[in-house]
Length: 322
Image (cartoon, rainbow, N blue to C red; front, top):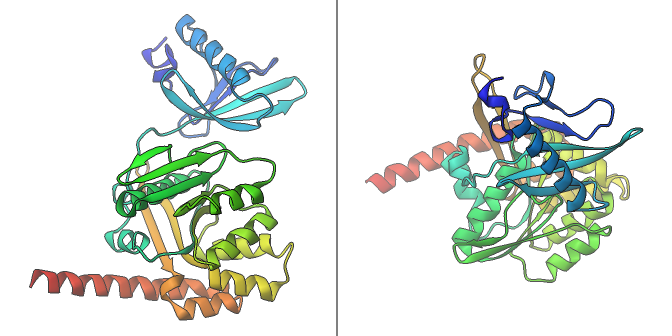
């Protein structure tokens, strides 16, 4: 038995599966490719039993929640099987990095943190690309810089732990059965920034877009491979309850920025963080493309805007140096 498997703290896993009556406890290794049975070391076994007990008593009836156990934060999802419930756990990163600390270019950070930014800011990317972590950094950085109140509407609470950040305060809230009412409550509480964890409900998305169009700053995440697909995904959801021309108009007026991020693998075992930002708030042509439903053309607008960002920042740097 190696030391790495003698305690939960030393176990490297991407997912932990606990409580299945027939299959037993197992875990997915760090590469998310191999499923392995958990060893029977008595120390590890005791920790796993305590963790399962904590999962069972933490939030009765909840399908997903955040759990603090043994000084570690987990995202827990409860799955029902013919043999009873199992708990699927992911270990949450405890570090609270800033946007700059995550690796976003300074040109992006300055635009995302400017005081007059309002509307819907979308963080998009593939699964497990760190979207929620970036959204949380955006919320915390804006509170630190501008103060005020931020509220998060998500379950489990991942984006930003509650507390003070500079002169600002973040208040995490749990979702209820009526997520539209959750949003209305946050809008009525003077929140300067609102993070909404999931926009897969058409009625909620429409309310988010309307609030963003009225000048509220709302941050959310979308599963999408690029900026254009992120807008198209929002269109697909909203079009379930609203006609297409109205959806396009609402998106064009409400979406302020879309940040796409990914982890590139230039070589085996290496990862490089990459990001692209389209500031629709600064681009009348991009908003016109959205209004016309030409989402596949946004890539060209993004490239042109990024070149302009680089050039303007370089010029500003030269002037500052002079």
